Length: 305
Image (cartoon, rainbow, N blue to C red; front, side):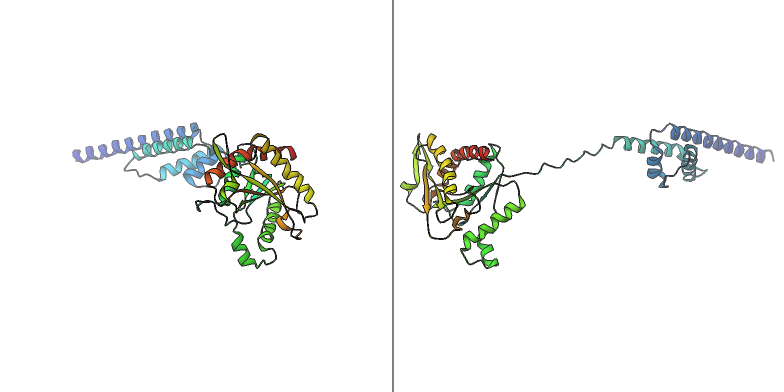
């Protein structure tokens, strides 16, 4: 009987110890929650998923406390301390989450020059690079002088085949491309149609200070009613180039076949058709020329913008 009494007394002591642990753990958790740097809204969304309301902070504490208590059993009081530790770790994670950087949209590019190739199929002697490559190179070189430009990448041949353009089909197609570019970029004022000529190497090449260059030629349609303006602007650039690189420009060539929209120069006096080299020039010679003329073209654009 005495033994049974001692056993019951021992159970009573254990029960008292459990109760004390629960009470101590509860007040520790209360202290943690009250001292937590988390805002009530963030804490409630993270831990309890209970929508934030206008309840007082004490209501918040009670809800969180009951959540902690309900997740444990009386047989394992040490899990209360585990929960407190987990809450602390979650608080730490939230503090360590870096703030998202504000994304600033890039400033929209406003090109002043549109570069295109009516005869995109024209190649140089290696037959690997052609006028499209020359156009992209010119764009890059002009960028060094703070001149923004765009190069037409749409296929002229594909457009002709799908659209059914027949009248003056190549220049008729690029006329549509020009108008599309003007509509897309209101900042465009200057236009360069880049070609290569079909002449002998001696006529299309010049050596200046030991370096070979592909000569250039400006072509205008004299049947265009505004051709005198086109001629004056073409001569302006040609003379700039020859002043420092005598003979690099072959000058301005006029063509009259009775077609007033030939070369599309009736659109603006700033539409230039430039032949760079010929079919026997190497791309390296063409590149040397673009290195030079990009400087003078950029000067001209800046002065007339």
